[in-house]
Length: 358
Image (tube, rainbow, N blue to C red):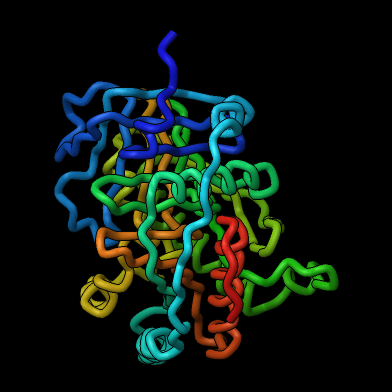
């Protein structure tokens, strides 16, 4: 049995996990990029940018391993990761204000009903293998409380690691599972959960996400909408609705990704080509890989795709960035939405084992 080489994995690697299945899948060793998956041997990964501008979106390495979380933690426990010394910059409210105003202008003109402005916390630090290990150890340790999807990808001195609750879809044969995840408050001791679930503004925001997903996929087959319920994370509360689709034609991974992404949870509702163009011109350089689609294709009958939120990105210029967004509708208040961005960033910092105070 071949042994997992942690050192090689930390040089150039990619991983994905599902807490529901208690599995984490890792790949490393000469990660190659492919334009098409037509003749690509399973398993392999998918990673595009938010706006689908990348030409090569499929990735495959020489080594592939599957672990349980306990099994992977056993590998990690004998190695020591180091917390990076990040020199954080002051959080800039102006970029978020610009986006918020842009989206509200389009809402008031009836171009859209919902948008998702984002902002970020930036800093400087060279992220080395010991820092990556530190991040991985923290997100794996916290996964049992998070009920989310772990992800990571690093190559050529840039990468991203995080813990996303935002599932675009999971596939079992022709059965597709996706979610509407929208509406957020802090998960505090004295929070009124019933008031949150029944808040008209939160329910309205959430309903747009359900409608947008249903409209996007209904031509593929029968769509079943589950009951909306509370989704609880260590620092945050969301509304979540399960959505099921039975494909009536042959399943096509790329077709479903391009149909669903971006859902109204991270994009706009209803979809609008002109807004999409203007938004991409405004945000491409700042967004980096925030909210991009990322997935794993294990075989023709089993695959996953998530949205890359709740993570940290770094590049070859030693710049690190933690980004967060939040849904905005007509009833939204600027200060409330800005505060939501800040406590989402705070939750990411804590999950990664870092420290920063606004």
